[in-house]
Image 1 (cartoon, rainbow, N blue to C red):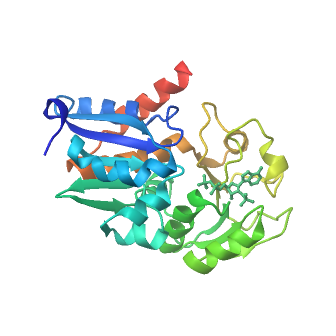
Image 2 (spheres, rainbow, N blue to C red):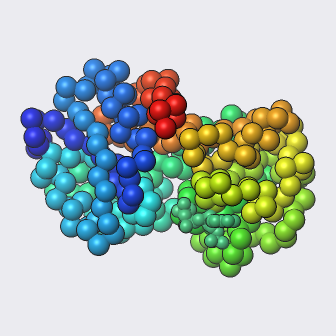
Amino acid sequence: MSGRGGKRRLAVIGHPVAHSRSPAMHNAALTELGLAGEWSYEAIDLAPEEFEQRVRALEGEGFVGANVTVPHKGAALALADTLSETAREIGAANTLSFAGGEVRADNTDAQGLLDALPDSPAGTRALVLGAGGAARAVVWALAREGAEVDVWNRTPLRAEHLCAELGGRPVKSNPMDIRCYGLIVNSTSVGLRDEDAFAELPFEAAQLEEHHTVADLVYAGRPSQLLTIAAHVGAAYVGGLEILVRQGALSLEIWTGRSAPLDVMRSAVAEQDVSR
Ligand code: ATR
């Protein structure tokens, strides 16, 4: 069943959500695929107490799918009628599909990260920073690919809990010796505001070397301090916008069955950067 004007509607649901680049990214992709006449993508701000009831009503309003972001990824999993194995194992969903009165939940954050990395992490020693919602998909993805994963978190107990559930080994030292790691992934929120990343994270800028690959999930409208230093020392690096594009591409493929136009999606999120 389709809603207003017969469009197949898609959305990103968050709280807040006005800052999201997903509508620009997905609408650019839909236009490129020649689907903009039938499909559209918007942002919906829902407070946690409204989430379940409104999501259940979306199919009746013509929605066929939604991305779900902070703080709803756990609630999205809880309300779904069917879960992908990935979403179930990670314990969070970022992609919902609506059909036949049922809600299906997927998680494309994990594969999105793997797709964004310049090389497979198989056999690599990886240091994951953070143990919140974002870190769950990262640890799951890297462990499943065969990386040896250490998890550091400001609050060590959360890292212990996450590793007990998803794999990986909690590490506590601060400062850390990071020479042994091939891959370092920042999945804390450090860098979102103007904090000094190296005052908050367990190593100094001078410890980053050319042999590291650095991934930073944070995007804040400017290259992060972590990625700026990584680039400076000649390390490989990937930023939050590329990871956003890759998870979005996988969601779009689930909903439309079409191959996502990555370059168009990259340009759409980058254009938003300039206008901010
Ligand atoms: P998200 O869903 O984005 O991961 P979250 O669940 O609130 O959000 O987790 C935020 C992560 O960033 C946590 O790992 C948090 O560390 P704590 O568990 O100690 O709170 C981390 N974080 C936030 N601010 C931080 C800071 N200033 N220094 C270090 N880590 C920080």
